[in-house]
Amino acid sequence: MPRHTTVAIIGGGPAGLLLARLLHTAGIDSVVLESRDRTYVEQRQRAGILEQATVDALRACGAAARLDREGLVHQGIELRFAGRSHRIDFPSLTGGRTVTVYAQTEVVKDLIALQLAEGGPLLFEAQAHEVAGADTERPEVRYTHEGRKQTLTCDYVVGCDGFHGIARAAVPEQVRRTYERTYPYSWLGILAEVPASCDELIYAHSPRGFALHSLRSPSVSRLYLQVPNGTDPGDWPDDRIWDELDARFAIDGDWRLERGPITAKAVLPMRSFVTEPMRYGRLFLAGDAAHIVPPTGAKGLNLAATDAVVLARAFAHLKATGSADLLDAYSDTCLRRLWRAEHFSYFMTSVLHTDPAQSPFDTRLQLAQLQRIAGSRHAAAELAENYTGLPMEGSVPPSFPSAR
Ligand code: APR
Ligand code: PHB
Image 1: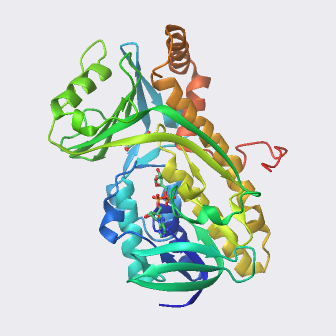
Image 2: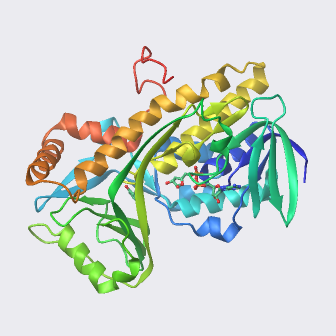
Image 3: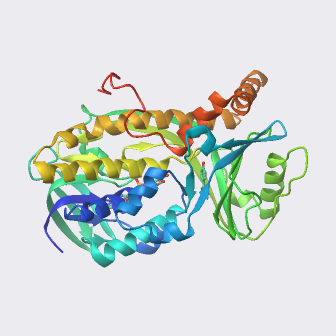
């Protein structure tokens, strides 16, 4: 195990793994420290809707062979509200864009296999405790592996250690600003061994709360129900879940939700969170370590991938030219696009869910907004562009003021 590396990466989720792969492709060495074991990281259930830019990044680092075989290209989504179904057609609204359905668990498995086969070191059960000297030329990561305390020195540290990680704390409080919103509801997510009852994802607004029908593979469906915060999944026997899904997805006309054995149940809280800046000295934050979106709209993985791409490009530019310009621009570059995605995720969440404190007036406003999306090409295109992923540059005018 090297004691020094160019880029020390804390966290082996999608952000850290993709960054390590992209750096490897650019001939830059790194070490990934991941606190959990391999099985845990590979089994963690998360969304699985990939924007084209995420697919491109996985291809660029050689990790898309299985994705190209098994990923399902989706050309739209279905919105359900007031007993009716409306399709949002991505290609015709966005000039040809689509998304690819391929679970985050599979993205992570593919990246891990490749990195272990031919990349730099990727250590599981290696828990980072502290980033020291972030504002010096020679930062250090202190971590424990196989019961021994170790120190990794490096040129740069990237905190890809998710929302509960330790890297963010190395940015001094006087420098760091955080923005946060919690939501008064959670999602009960299930995996079921049953083919999806739909060809495309269904996002349903109903008087009983939000429901989402997604899928993991041709034989496994992923479904979600809005539930109160603090819900115990034990209070939701399988029949209750299917009955509630039936009620929330109900439309006038013919549609049937197929039932099957439920193999996993979990309650997920909803949060929006941003920390600024995403860089302090030689420490960079990427993915959930820097920002969280609520899952409505499936932006989390894609935002993590964008950070990894922007950062890998900046390191490659530094290596090729000696210029740190792109590294210096990293935080602003990512935050500009991030805030758009924050707004989109917040918008999708608040227009589709029922806030427990919501009045009938609020519900009418939600329905008016959903009707506008269903009835106006402009409103539908706004949703489709955001859902399929806005380009890195051009998502805001160049004159947009710096985030700091
Ligand atoms: N030391 C080492 N590893 C750590 C530490 C630590 N102190 N703390 C956390 N980690 C690891 C976690 O075990 C996890 O594997 O960092 C990784 C962070 O991964 P994610 O939480 O998946 O975050 P990220 O890679 O940014 O990916 C974001 O994941 O949460 C979803 O919806 C989100 O899809 C998005 C994606
Ligand atoms: C999922 O497949 O888990 C999923 C899909 C779309 C979302 C959120 C989650 O908006």
